[in-house]
Length: 402
Image (tube, rainbow, N blue to C red; front, top):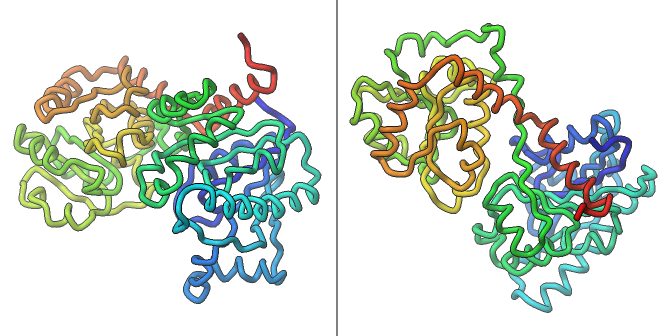
């Protein structure tokens, strides 16, 4: 545990982002016992054009014009910085010397704004935690001189065209100069180890309290009670880029007595798929996140039928923690990220292996296995995740054991 320190968090997601964010969860956990400055990315000139349609952009322009405060206290021990200086949009610049020259100037502007907050808050000997900001974080170690510079990888960003243009060259450089590299996937850990010997798997956190049914107080929804057993269920966005529609069709046809229940909004390919014509497949639609534990409780087997591609192979599947925290038998596609859960899940690759895994998950379920799964899922809290991050920061600051 690290206590009483000053920590600066920079990353690729601002505090006012409309979706959930690992980085925000980590920052909030860090702020329980430390002072934390969460820094939004600076406004760039391309994004500035959206000021008439996006209030968040308009807010940043008001801050840039000194019409609103740039440093906002979120809660005790935690502040959010809106950088005042606007930076150039340079992803179109050819990779190499010219890009580095302009990007260093962007880093300098960003660092100047951060330094003003450091001075106002009186931060000293701070930890700089960089959530995947490989461009605007490229020179911050040299410019801000933190006691520890930690780089956090939680996505294969260089598979995305925007990040690939310069990231294939720049992210390895940033990994190599970081004091500590922490990752939420075995795949990213192995990638980091190509450039530093200090790349570590720390897992990921989850708000597991929502999925703790120790007192058996979570009710099963009425629309699930009307569906016959056994129920093989999934909760989450039904994305054809991430989920295997053909596999779901195969499972439904392999065992007509299995009820395939899908809870979540659908993309266009799911809406047009054959699944809607299969009698034992049930689409229950989108539900509020607070209701998901109720649906998971009613499943006999939980599943994560992923495709294996750049979008899925390394990503930490948070829903697995949610399934396990409720003690549910869980079957998932055997991606690299799922190695982390191998002892408590059933992993499969082919359609035939999937059928066998679901059969086994149903037949083997027991009170003992349920307790084992719950212990695993509930251990993956944000508190424990941040403790793992601290462990490697602390090891660096103490000089790394031989």
